[in-house]
Length: 148
Length: 167
Image (cartoon, rainbow over all chains, first blue to last red; front, side, top):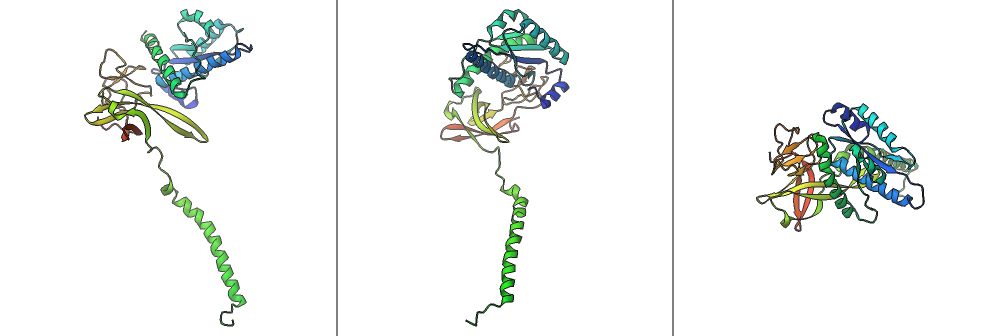
């Protein structure tokens, strides 16, 4: 499901089945050396999130990506999001990111950190197969969490 | 000269009839065009998409075949990649849609080690037999859709989705 009017109506009617929120986290880096790599990482994160949405369409809602800067406090961001999402009736939350700084928070188990792969130099077919591989590795992570 | 003389009255009436006819035609043509428009409409969705899968390579084990087509959404054109589970049943080639009939997730062949020879939906543990029939007591309420298939110079072509004809 996407974050739009039509899918949200389905979500509210089918809460027992649709119980997981996906939030892509993308870093905005204004420095000249980090600008390009941040954009590349964001592209990867968003493409992968779309793949996840396609695979698990009937159980997740993919939220718009959350963009932040380095200075913002990550713990507060996580807590605020989690609180609001729980409020909406979701049981599980996954944050998808390629920013290494989140990886220290993986004990929370809701942040999935995937190292970014530069997709910009690949053709569509190559891109798809790379993302497909990444997705295959993610399926057990989701399945494990849902089994709890 | 005097034989084919056209009187002023005649000339005027010819001219008026001619011009009037043109005007009437100008008004009627679009109306007729609108009225029979459904007949002229090109049928959408019946087109077959060529895949890179060789017919000879298809076995009895379902494999995932991706195919890409151009989707036009109002003025916005985009390439959409879709997939099908393709296998051979006797001499017949069968292509099933990977979209779960429950809430639209993507199903995988033998996605659950506990259930061999079945399609598995990881979202809510829905299961389907190889022919697409939904396994009772799992969430899906209907069988997987099927795709029309045909051969083109040894390669597989996939057409539009149709309700499952095997169940």
